[in-house]
Amino acid sequence: MARPASWHHGTVRLRTLIPATAALSAAAVGYAAVIERNWFVLRRHEVPALPPGSAPLRVLHISDTHLTPGRKRLMSWVRALDELDPHLVINTGDSISHPRAVQPFLDSLGPLLDRPGAFVLGSNDMYAPEPHNPARYLMGPSSRWRIRKEPDLPWEKLCDDLTAAGWLDLNNQRGRLTVGGLDVVLAGVHDAHIKHDRYEKVAGQADPAADLRVGVMHSPEPRLLDQFAADGYDLLFAGHTHGGQLCLPFYGALVTNCGIERERVRGLHRHPADGPAWMNVSGGLGTSPWAPVRFSCRPEASLLTLVPRDSR
Ligand SMILES: [Fe+2]
Image 1 (cartoon, protein in one colour):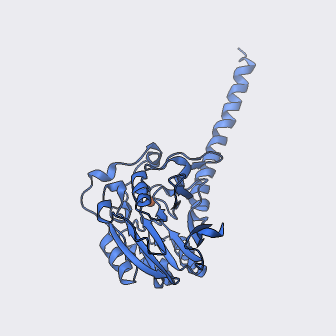
Image 2: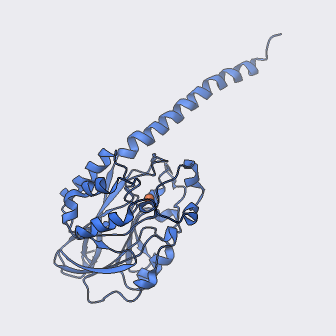
Image 3: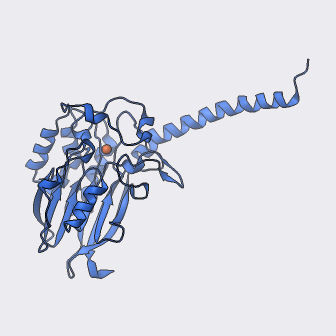
């Protein structure tokens, strides 16, 4: 008995469609894992945050390198950022993802370590990533950290080595630096994603006599951003979101993995929207080793050139 023509055409269409879809998916995963994951980009902004008459100040912001020892391209790209001649380097955490990544991370920074710098930690600096379905990233803020007690990554060595190089440890601490001839006060908190933030330890009005007040955190939680802004910090730095890591073209991030809204998952924004503070959320340079893909969300560092407030 002859099969109906529509059945036959439907089968042919399906036979073509399934391999075509599979090939397209494989190509997308290959692109996300091999090409875009190593397609680093520098995002530049001019930010009117300095007192009138100040010379421009270049601040390099890196975040979420999630370094494992084999990531040579990432390491050499970070190292070359020294050519930007930044006055100050801010690292908002999740620097390592491997027990032997501290030295490779220091090697990546290389000459940047000779410049003034400041850092906070992220949860991934303390806890090795666990294998899990990458789709879990898309299912809202992760909570698995809360049940883990003992850190299994060398976060203390990371802090000690960065501090020994002269960088300020801003984990629930304040600091002060003279950079580019400007008096800069800084305060930071440890990672709110694992409830290690203790804002009360740095709370209080930032010195109004300083030339610039900088707040640093890993995860851009609105309550922390509000507190820093209320205490008079001019410029806030955060990472953690990976810019969404897997984004849809023309739509953007599906999730932020924290309290910040999708529209501010990465980039330079005001905080609050009509307020005086600026906030730079880094989309980060790496990925979890268990979800080594980035799509429509290139890994990035940012260079903020701070200029006087009256120059715009
Ligand atoms: Fe991260």
